[in-house]
Length: 119
View (cartoon, one colour):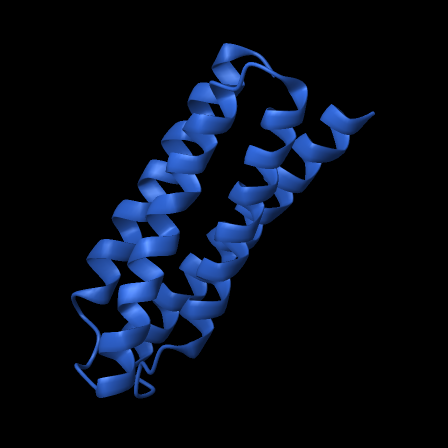
């Protein structure tokens, strides 16, 4: 992948992590939300962090392992987003659905990069 593509994905993963952090501040503070948001904040940040590490890999094998980790963290973020309780507040549900869409897009991007790199 070229440096422009890398920079775009880096920016996208950073903005995703930021958006998640802003979103969780507005959630109702239920016991499950408190615990689930801890995991969501962690996994959403790890998506970008693991992408940065994958791009610094020396070997193709390390790159592939790193990209698989990116994909796994994006899937985990998708999982935690789906568990959150928005208490049917329309604005929160809309924002959650937007973040779920972004998490899905990230999974698709990383899967495509993996497929191309393995070819």
